[in-house]
Length: 123
Image (cartoon, rainbow, N blue to C red):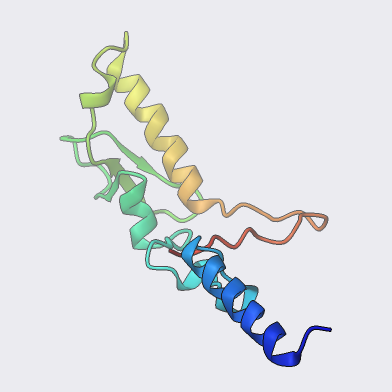
């Protein structure tokens, strides 16, 4: 018959083995919002991650896009460098800018039947 002390020792050994492998319990996991690499949707960090820069409307030096939803105007950080191999780089830059602004402003909706959010393990 196994004693209570042997069970405790096995439990501690298992906990140490899991810790060595980077496996954490649910209580030890960190919510995505509390992680250092979390970028809130629509935040200034999100703007930077998308490669957007706030701009003034009517600035002729850059291709700009003004959102019809919010009225904010943005430009691409690297306007033409990534589009130089396109037939019409300015058109490609304008379409990409419009897509990025839409991604910034339209928060994705979670369906009612969606599974719970994935909680990554922190190392």
